[in-house]
Image (tube, rainbow, N blue to C red; front, side, top):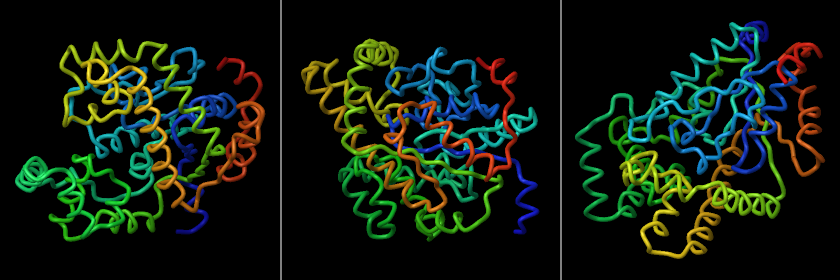
Length: 333
């Protein structure tokens, strides 16, 4: 595609990074400076009621900046990446029509990829028969059986999926059994296609020990904010059942054992901290594969404001996005 055609595409700023790195705060800072609106790319923040455990930004944290695709469905409703992609395209188009800059921000790599690239989703053209058989095999032979089968036909996808993530493992296997093409190959093919937007991707990192410290502190803060009470309320209403997508959310499944008296609170907290650190590592493995991402080490900036000021010139250069006037900025505060 020619450079001129690329300039005709709508601009899109993408902000990614591991959990607890500081995406939420920085996305708001950038939105305030660039007249932006935030499109959340988080596979768990789409669920109503999963507030503390998914670190949804509060009204105060949003600072008047519109946030989209949060609280889209109830915990017991069906939702997947294909539905997210459809909603995200619609929201981004509406933001562009308003003359604002859409900022796609989040840590769910597959959701980000779904917006930027075209590829076949496991739930499109799904086979109920194959899906039912795979889930039955998982129940009869255990989750590692399915994961080993996936590793034989699609080792790259198997590497990034935990064996206990039966839902995603079975979807990847189903996709292969239906099409004969591994999910990793289909995703790679999609990466070679041009994205529908004029994209600038910014990645946020921190020194590993500092990120782990932030993760550990975030978990403790979630407990103080009422994560246990939130989980109890959700469980009492029959939400977060095993096998549901929402039921896989970090924070709730680890707290369940404590609520059911199977572990102490300290044990539950330690498991949640460890699981979150492992999740952050998987996120970085995913994002590091994208050579188009411009990385910023937040540890090198004293404040989020300073980091935002460092990123803004890159946005202006790559997206040809006009500078927000002081008047417009004051209206957003």
